[in-house]
Length: 195
Image 1 (cartoon, rainbow, N blue to C red):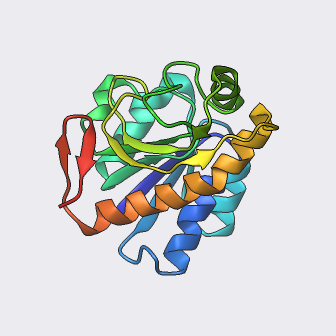
Image 2 (cartoon, helix red, strand yellow; image 1 turned 30 degrees about the vertical axis):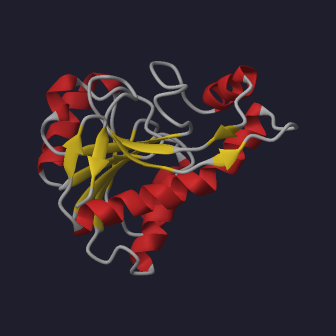
Image 3 (cartoon, rainbow, N blue to C red; image 1 turned 120 degrees about the vertical axis):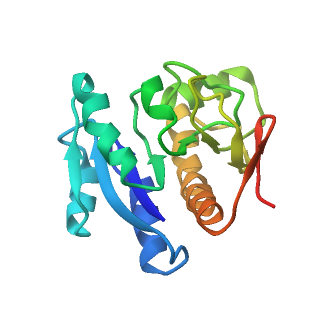
């Protein structure tokens, strides 16, 4: 399975995929492209250090740059990519995204990073955790592939909760890629089912 991994920042989710491939946890997977919305993203350095092809895309070129990339891969992974994928790109190949809340809670336009964890804390929720889902034109509303729960501590700040969520994001993102590379799946309502 060939991946295009789309990033905007530090690239810790990208690194978790690189490590899982190197350790042969997902042996049938290779990263064909790393695409960044930010030319200064540390994720690009991670990609280059691992010999991966990198592309920096401007917002006005999103469709023209991403369409041929999407056509050359089997799965697109949004790993901290902050821009909305235009509708015309959504049907080319499956696209998955990792989000730092238990969707459908605390998702939608403008909900990313510490904004999400801050909203979780403000709500009084006692549990949280990341979600991997299929991307549709309903922002953060696509069928759910995988989730993992964790405690929201009484002394959590938006930053500490987000930081503690990251390792779980890495786990379930890699696991979702593994599941999608090994098995056929079907969508039943708002869930992705692996037979």
